[in-house]
Image (cartoon, rainbow, N blue to C red; front, side, top):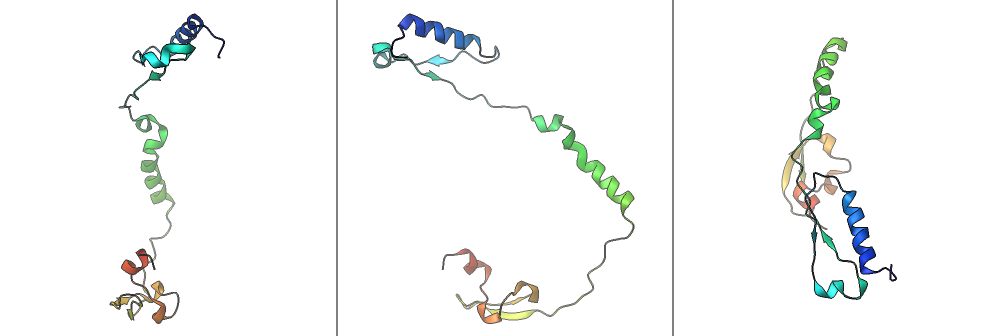
Length: 125
């Protein structure tokens, strides 16, 4: 690239610009005098154009959830099973802040003395 003349660089830029899609606006070429000396290539600044078309709405997948509900109704032989098992809440105390809570036994994996409340679980330590 060092042995290219300014005329060759201009021709190359013109060829590259001709390959761009026609709906794009003309790119701005910076005209900094320091960049144009010694056969350096000028930079092209382009601003991204916001896309206003939601392409998902045009795809087939956009309406598939509607047919899924209909298929589920046709294939369902039984209604969902109601949850009949009762449980008693367990009273636990957070080992960090000391806050007492009543929680479901399924939330406790270890012994109750190892319990940490949600607030303390999110913080470091």
